[in-house]
Length: 253
Length: 273
Picture: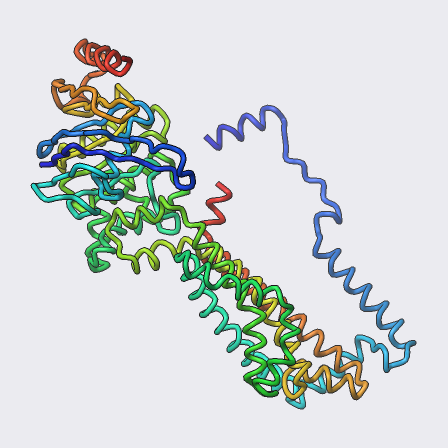
C-alpha cells in the first residue's frame, strides 16, 4: 500500500531571489491500495508530474511524507519503477540492451537478464526487435520498450508519467488496451499521470482530479466500469459518458 | 506493393533518366587531374636547379633508396612510437580529466583558467622551453605531442559530458544506478560522439606536434630527416619525407573517422532520421 501524507513542494527560481516561490503541491494526501490502478488527472501546472516524481524518489518533498508498506520513501527504490513521458531510452543501446538496463545495474548476470528482457519484450509484443536501436522504431514501440524495461524489475508500484502523451491518437488507444492486458497479468499497483479525461476513465479504478495554483487534489472519483474494458466499446457506454461529463465539470470550476 | 508501383510506372510510360557523362565518374577526373599535374611537374622540375626543386621520377628513386637502406622504416618506427605514446597519454588524460570537469562544476571552475591559458598559448612557443626541461630525446617529443593533442580531447569530452541531458541522467537514477554506474553506463556512452570528434581533431594536431618536436630536436624521426636532407640540399629525399607525412596524416585521420562512425553510429543515424 502507498500512502501520501500532507505533501507540499515549493520551487524557487534559481537565480532570482526577489521572485516568490511557486507552490507546486500543497497538502496533498491520498492512499492507493495494492493492485489498484489510479490516474492523476489535471491541467498543466497542477503538480501531477511533480507528485509522481516525488513518489518515484527522484525529487524530495518539502513537507509531508510518502509511505510504501509503512516505510518512508526518500530515494528511488526497487519497489517502484518509472515509465517516462519521453520514453527515457538510452539511444546507444539496442532495444534488448535497453530492457536489460535496470537488471544490469542490479548486477544480474548477462544470460539471465537477457532471458528476462526477452520475456518482457514478448509481453509487450516486441519480439523480433531486440537488435533495433530506439531511433529505428516508432514512438509507440519505443514506449513499449520503456514499459518492458520497467516491468522487468518486477516493481510493486508502476509509475507512469504521461507515458502515451508523445504518440499519435490511434497508437495511444492501442497502447492503453495493451497496458490493461499486461496489467491483468502482472497485477502491479499503477499510478498513471495523464491530462486526458478519456484515458483516465478507460484505464483506472480511481481518478484523482488535481487543480493548479497551488497544486492540490480536487476530487477523488471511483471508476466502477466493468473489466475487462477492451471487450466491446466501453467508451460508448452511457456510464463512461456520465463520468466524462462529471470529470469535465469538476476540472472546469 | 512494390510490384504494384512498377505496374503503374510502366503504364504511365515513365523511366528513370540515365544520361551518362564524364560528370558521373569523378574518380576518373581526379586521376586525370593528378596525372596532368605529375607530368607538368616532371617537365618543369627537370629544367629547374635541383637544389630548389626536384621532379617525380627523382622522388621515386630517392624513396627507393631510403626504403632499401632501411632508413625510412627506422625513422618512421621511431616517429610512430613517440606519436603512439604521446597521443595515447593525451587520450587517457584528456578523457579522464574531461569527465571530471564535465561532472563537477567546482573542478571545472578550478581548472578552467589554467587550461584556457595553456590552450591559448601556441604550443610551438613552448617547445624550446620543454627542450630545456626534458632534453632532446624521446621524452620531449612525447610531451610536445601530448600538449598538441590533449586540449581538443579534454574540451570536447567536458562539453560532451555537460551536454548529457538531465532527463537521461534521471533514467539512471530511477533505475538505482550508483554515481559510478551513472558515469560509466550513462554519461560516458552519451558523450562518446563528442569524445570521438575531439580525438579526430587531436590526431591531426598530434602529427603536427610530432614534426615540430622532431624539427627542433633534429636527432631522430621523420622531422629530423627533413632537417638533415634540407641541410644536405637533397631535395628529392625531403620530398619523400613530406609525402610520407602527408600519407600518414591522411591514413590516421581516416582511421579515426572510421572509428568515430563506428562508435557514434547511433548518433549519426539518429540525426538522419
